[in-house]
Amino acid sequence: MSDAHWNNTGVKQASASPFTAYSFLGRWLFALVLVLGTYNPTAYSFVGWVFGENAQFGPFMAMAGIGLLIAWIVFLRATFLSMGWLGIILVAALFAALSWLFVDIGWLKLDSTNAVAWLALIALSLILATGMSWSHIRRRLSGQYDIDDVED
Image (cartoon, rainbow, N blue to C red; front, side, top):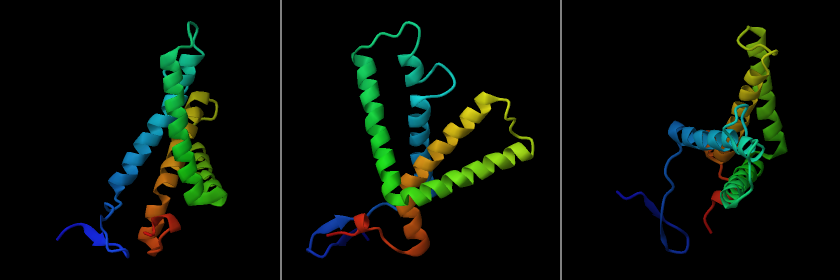
């Protein structure tokens, strides 16, 4: 049996691959590379490169910046469209509460600014990955499609 269906205009179309934990992991890894590639507490990021001591603006730096900007727009647009402000605030609040739990049980010290920065960057990447995956997750949980998912 083929993994395809007929749409309402009589055209045979391939079905989307099923959403799995690996699908979310792939989105999260890409979001993590995007976030940490843009900024992290080490000197190994775009921000560290641009503001480094011997930084000279050139075509490689411009191309990297434009590539990062495109990726950020794709992730942010998908996140805002799928989750909205309320969803983003709720997921951010969940990660804030989780961070509070880590501080409360002693796994995270607030005097370590690097640890807090890494935790915030990882949380941001998880928020972006959740936003990129939310339509799939909601469809699996509720059976409801987003308007963008319905074929013409």
